[in-house]
Image 1 (spheres, rainbow, N blue to C red):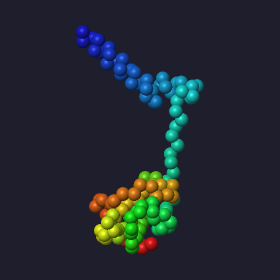
Image 2: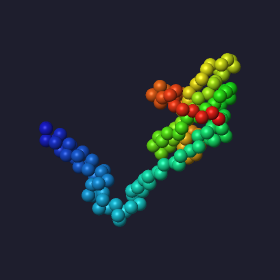
Image 3: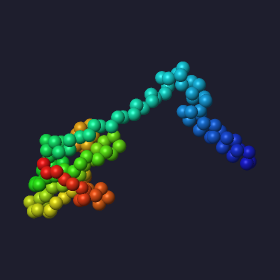
Image 4: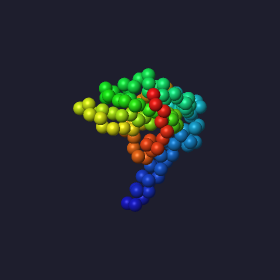
Length: 134
């Protein structure tokens, strides 16, 4: 009975080797049957350094929506993989139009556009960053 377990283990081991792109059986047929394989992924080049101040100023609604904001200022752009992130601070009025104080946000810039916007966390240290007013 234990021999069946060994046979199945060996079969699974060999099947796993056949799925590996570096296995000899795959590399043997990859050149002659390339249509069966996905093309190699092209590495993405990083985006150039963005002008965060101009991006936020041109489309402040993307960052804050319909919320009333005053004293908007932006921090420096920081690389984040192929994208960039930047801290933004503003004096924000809540839904009831009451001032809720200075709030910090982080925006992701991808392809020269503002993407994800979210409240900043203490780990991002936006409060200690120098800001430039818009």
